[in-house]
Length: 183
Image (cartoon, rainbow, N blue to C red):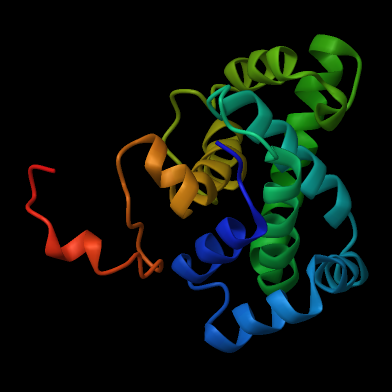
């Protein structure tokens, strides 16, 4: 299953990050414009995006393709429009990078998916409850693991993986409400 930019826009709309006009502008102006805005608005935005991509590569099912492009579009837009989220993610990333350096002597974003999964497990994010102001494990779960999972399953293509044909914020089509529930 190949994730597209349209999937990222649908997930952003579903999350309430952008509305109809924002979605149209993103589609018109493209990812590069939003990426540049994100990089200019906060220290470390690029590092956060790279870490979110690394997290997605570790937690997404193996049949998902174009993970990098999808997560970059989603994350750069969200970070540009939600400065509080960006600040919290930057704090959580410093702890995530510290664990990655202890375990593999590298930044989290530089790790391969198996190593990233090991670091996420070692931080405790695998079983933690998400909390933006909680422990390191809770913050990593909130800002990184849950964020990329929401983006995936909030998109039309990602939703198909778990049988959510019509995720919130994505209009679907007339077939989704005209057929019987058992089909």
